[in-house]
Every structure is written in structure tokens, then in C-alpha cells.
Length: 475
Image 1 (cartoon, rainbow, N blue to C red):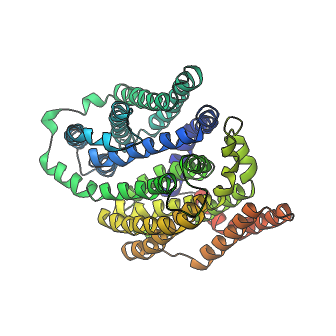
Image 2: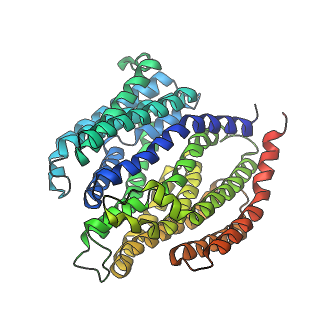
Image 3: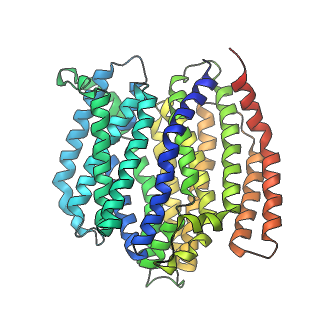
């Protein structure tokens, strides 16, 4: 099987395993907005982001090293997994010692015990799922994704719709779902056979930590980029001339991110497969051509998907967001178009990060993420002051765009591959024009959006067809 077919095969497996689960996640969005007020939805989002902020720090991002060195045949899988488990346990114990500091967070009061359990369960599942993927058990990884989301959906229905536990119910649902998923992988994949303290290897631990430690601030900085928006929108009530700030505005902002998450879902499915290919093909002679073909097709597909979503943003928002309980959610679609472009840029950045992972240059991932985070923080202060939620949306896009510009220059110094910047610029300009039209909603909206969609399909078809031909080629 050639590298293109292997990538396509893995992507297909992840897509099949993820499709049903992603549909359930979309239904959860409607469940949350129907049962949780916009203000409480903001609290839910901040708690979730806080957990995502702490996890890479508490675990030393060791799960990222597990996929990198678990796929590398030069390393013993038992030594890799055992060393990772010991490292993660040490990090978790340190986190528990400092956990009383969480009570200083105003939105976390009353949720700290649940937040800690949430972090423990998510870390446990993350490590197990990455090792399963590193062993090449992609079908099991995909099956676990389905079962985990199904259990998450059931727990949410029980705790939120039936028992009406609100934010507490959400935290309990995620915690139990992640724990069940981690135990499922541990038992079915016989991970206990790979965990043996006799296989703990200090030298491998040092190698893995040298790889993963630069990824801690990287992960944290990406969280800050998404996390700071919500904090600024929620707490700049007395420092903004815009009425679109406060608890309700933050809740609406969180709801507006649900449609762009469709783009993120697709990119995550592909990235899971692509990251494996990037690592295994790192030493191949034609890796530059491989990167060029895949990136060109991926970029075209993502722009096409984003343009369709922008054109259909209002019906998609009405489908995913229930505004009957809280009318404030009805405005969420106005902030979604530019967020879609922002998530598109994040997906392209994610693709480029695979070069840093494959070549073990994770420090580059850190400093490029730092640039994005600083850009985001500065623009948040300036733009939210003036335009509220829409300012946060623009700041998000700009930070990801700046990161893309830096990374497309930096990564091509490490692995050179052709990139058509003119095609990228044209796609971006047309997509932004569609965003403005979707927000303004002029009378000519439908014919203009249809024309733009036709243009995007024709303009991007060649890059996709070239890669499809390569995929269908025998040998």
C-alpha cells in the first residue's frame, strides 16, 4: 500500500469511527443551549477551558511523546508506555498538591472537586488512546471514539435533561465518559501488558520529556488563545464601550463557536491520520512532494468546506442552537462567519505543526504559538473594547493568521515543499467577502453566495483532483 493510500485508509477509518460520534456532539450543543442559560453556558465553557489548560501542564504533555516514539520502531513500546505512565502519575500528584489554588478562580468555586476528577479522567483516557494509536490499532481507536461519545451523550441526557444538574451535570458526564473510555482501552488493548515498572527507562523518559516539554507551553498558549477571548468578553463589562460584553455575551460567543467546530471536527479526523503518516514518512526521499500534494489538497478542501458553511451559516445555527429557552442565543450566527475562517486557519496551523512533531523540533511549535497568543491578547484588549464579541472573533482570526504566516515560512526551512500563496490569498479574500455578506444579509445575499460557491469549487478542484489521481495510481 503506497503512502497516499495508507493515509486515505487511516483517514477513512477515523472518519467512520468519528462520524456518528460527531453527530451526537452536535445534538449535545442543542441539548446544552436548551437546558443551560447563556450565563451558565459561559461558566461551563470556562471550566472546560480551565481543564484543557491544566492537563498538558499536569501530564507534561507526555501523551504527545507517546504517539511520536510509539510509532518509531527504534524504541520499545513497553518502555515508552511505562515511562509515560510514571511521568504522568508524578505530574498528577504535583497538580493535586497545588489544587487549592483553583479556589481562587471566581467561576470555579463549587466545582473544584469535579474539575480535578475531570482532569484525572481526561488525562487517563488521553494517554491510553494515544498509545493505542501508536500501536497502529486505528480501528479500536475509532471504535472507542464512537463508544466514548455515545456514553457522553447518554450521561448528558441523564444529568442535564432528566436530573437538571446544569453545569455540574456536564462535568459529571465528561468525567464518567472519559473514565469509561480509558478503562475500555486498557482492557481491550491489554495495556496492562505494556505497563511494568521493570521497563521504566530513565533515558527514554529524558528523550520523551525533551520532546514533550516544549509542547506544554504550546498547548497552553493555544488554550490561552481561545480561553482569553471568553474571559475578556465576560469580565470587560466596565472597560468596554460595546454592549456585547458580560456573562450573557460570553455565553452567546461560546454558542457561536459550535458551527465552526464542524470544520475543527473534519480537520481533527484528518490530522489523526496525517500525523501518523508524517512521522512514519519523515525519512522518505520524496517527503517534500508528499507534503506538497497533501497540503495543497487539504487546503483546498478546507476552503471549500468553510465557504459552504459560511453560505449556510444561519440555517446551520438554527439547527444546532436552541434559542427558545434563552433568546440571546438567536444572535449567535452573526459572530459565526469570521470564527469559521479563524478555525480554518487553526486547522492549517495544525497541519504545519506535524512537521515540528515529525522532525522533533517542538521548540518551534512553542515560539510560533507564543506569537499567536501575544497577538490574541493584545487584539482582545483593543477590539473587544470597541466591538465586544465581534472584536473577540476578529482577534481570534488574526492570531491564527499571524501564526500561519510565521509557520509557513519556518516549516519550509525544515522541509521544503511548494506552496501557492496566490491561491491561498484568493481563497481567503473570497471567503471573507462571503463572511461580510453573511453578517450584513443584503437582499442579494443568496445569488451572491451561490456565485461565490461556484467560483470556490472551480478554483479549488485542480489541487484536489491531482491528489485523487495519485491516490488511485497503482503501486
